[in-house]
Image (cartoon, rainbow, N blue to C red; front, side, top):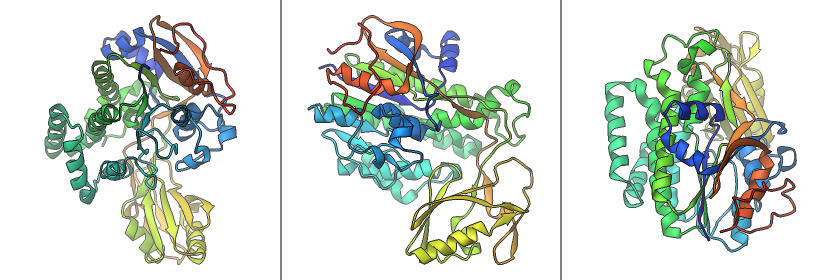
Length: 454
């Protein structure tokens, strides 16, 4: 059975890919495209256009109105379902590397949970040395900090699990560049992509899986924040003057980085079938929306007068963080104080109290301003907004779009870009292995002669 590797580059734009290919910027994407059946997935029927919703839809073939996932960390809603689980149950060895918001549980091959699910368990267990650091790197990306305690076992792990000299050199160059110019820290995720690929390649070869996924989010982040720097003519307001000049190249740099990774996939797995998917995409967004996160979580608990012995805080994604409590009384007290915190006459926080002992919180201020104003706390104390919160990165400039990429390498390529429902991806992957889709996958597989079990 020919191995299938599913490359998951979150939210890449089919339009930008075609534009960059035509300009000669993405030679490896061109090679993959010209050897594939090329489709555009359509997520316009989904109620909530977010990657943590669309990736579960892609993997399970279940529309979001049926799988019910609306937030990060809800992968258990589809536990026991999805392509990887169906293939495993059919006797195939499978591996999952970072696929977003899914809970496949232990598999015969390997599982690297997505970095936004810190409580998920990697398999084999030794992968935790890798995943703990990645979780800290991704969740603290907005603060430009790294968990030094997790770095030591991480470095020891990657040194013995596939790290290449080229990746080590890339990491060294990044550290040198950052020391010379801290404004280049945005490139860290490119280094993490290279390290992740090294580890992924080692896992695929060691476990000899028949199906594997590889997920990356780096360029989605660049698009969300730096599209304005990339194409300022598409926006009514220019980038903020404090933005680093290098950010004008961030989006194209992200696509070039993925092109290098595609080249590695093609070189390292020449006899395997590559599948490329994005689940959704992005488009320019002419807005002045931006996001703020607490500068110091301990100080935030202090000014809100929340007992740190009964309250813990953990970042989730971008401006969001999770408050967890030892008892319901503490949770109720926190909820009251969150509601009573104002900036001007508007709420300071937005929050979801989905579980009795946990509240997901984010700053409700979401518009760019040189000075936001004064925060009034429930006890009447007033403090400057800037003493509690810092703006993340820059003004938002990319928003989600329902079109996504779905390319399948095959002997007789077709590049027409036919549109298919996002729910058709999962049954199509199963058909590559001669596995009949389960009853919960209601959309038909894409039928075309060139793709068949081999």
